[in-house]
Length: 400
Image (cartoon, rainbow, N blue to C red):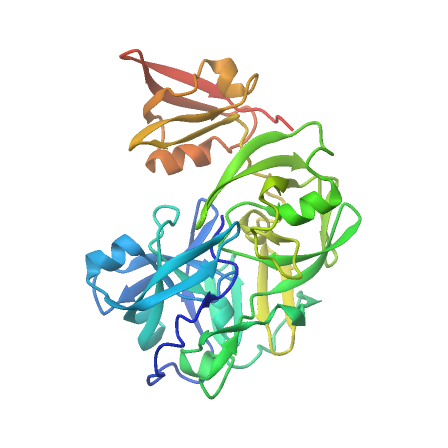
């Protein structure tokens, strides 16, 4: 999770608007989902192959992985700053022509240089920039349009928070933008009212976050939630601004419109990080663990978000059922976190074990995803300890 939730400020204000080439009618383009990350293919400066860019309703600025921008030789245009989920960051700004999903073309756009993105993502598409945008997870299609679609059978209407809009960078992409005159525009990332454990809360709808419900440190501190759940799973998240501690708990319920999610998995931000999240009216975000179960359309001008359950509505929740995290220490993959008495600990993993492989695909990212699988499933991990390699079979279990 943890991609930019606010504007990458001033990124576009450095430049004069170019000629927008997107037609004045709605278009769709395909997207895929990998480990709770929705992404689409993007061409930069007409170069092949296309790159996987994260589709992020919580971001108002385009971004590209800094190392990829240098590799492609993208032109440097200046510097900017922005707000991540926890903390602020300073960013290099690049310029490039952009083609989204083979459907939307722009001859030039500013892209903020990201120092970190979850693999294999190479950049960010900020859906908050568009006048009308939607995601259909059944069809795996993104909709962007200048007019609201007429056929909304089966959708429920939710009000968007009008207080979320803030000054942003130059709005591009022609007919699909929020500002017909291509002037300074506003960040229309969707924020809705929901109900968490009987309390009314404002939540950012953020497809850039792979987790489910994340409550910001300020809110957790104010409501005294950190120590309210004796049964919890310690952990952490990686954001653009760095690492942050979390606790994963199982709440009573989350209600979005008429939809009720019973006993949802929730990540609590550490109260020690209070004051760093830069949040406004919203107290948390709804990430892909919930959003992949809904088809939705956002119309910020009408201040409406329309939602409809899709085929994944009854899927089980994914979260860390091993009590272990694997990451890089000085370039070496190791067990970086291990909860005492958890499934990984009981299976024989040791903190600091060097991870040399596992029975699965997609490297460490695939392993981390597998450790969030269904209870009762087994994940086999090869580790090296004291110069000897061995296989450790971790049987996942519901720990909260």
